[in-house]
Each structure stands twice: as C-alpha cells, then as structure tokens.
Length: 150
Image (cartoon, rainbow, N blue to C red; front, side):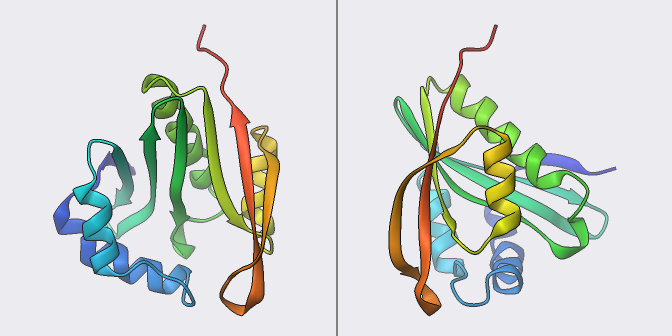
C-alpha cells in the first residue's frame, strides 16, 4: 500500500535520480532540490512511496492568492494507476488550504498525458512560451481558478 508523506532532505538523491530517469533533458539536480526544500514553508513537496521506493512526487509554491505547481512526476513503474491525478488533486487541496484563488503551472506542449490530466481538472492555457524547453519545445502556461470548498 503506497504511503504519502512530506519530502525530506534524505529523499534528495532518490528524487534527483528519478528526475534524470523521467526528464533526461532537463532534470532537476540535487542542488536544485536542496534549493527547493530550503524554500519551505512557502514550498510544499510530497512523495508517494511503496516498498520499492518513490512512486511519485509533487510540489507547490504558495504565493498568496496564486499557487504555482512546481512539479508533478510519476515513476514509470507507478504510471497508469491514477497517481498523477491523485498528486494533482492533493496539490489543489493544499493550494485551497493555503488561501490560493488560482493555481498556475507550466507543461511541455508535447506532454499529451499531462495536458489531458490538466484539462480534465479545468486548467486552461494562459500563455505559450515558444522554444522554452530543450529541443525547442514550447511551454504552455496553464491556469485554474479555484472554487472554495463547500
């Protein structure tokens, strides 16, 4: 049974290794992860793990009325199980809890699975950043207006 928990400093080597596996052209380094975790409590990161290690991770930057999804990733062995959607839903819950009225994120234009997930949750395209990613791939800036929990 997978468990959910906050990212710890001890997770950094495993997170950086998983980043290289998932995003070989633009992975976050260990140094990048150190910087992200140093930004707490404004930065909010969680992992999902099982006996085999980290299955997925996600993080937010709480910036007042706007929260920014910093990352969502699922290890290849954890895909097709709804984990990406569960991670996104948890981030949206945390953004609401922090008082955000809007969530924004950036996604590669060629990441069809992520784009479908975000569209299913109501995200819309706000802007296109041409050639932003390695290889000249565009970045799409997406946004979602949060509804207050009832």
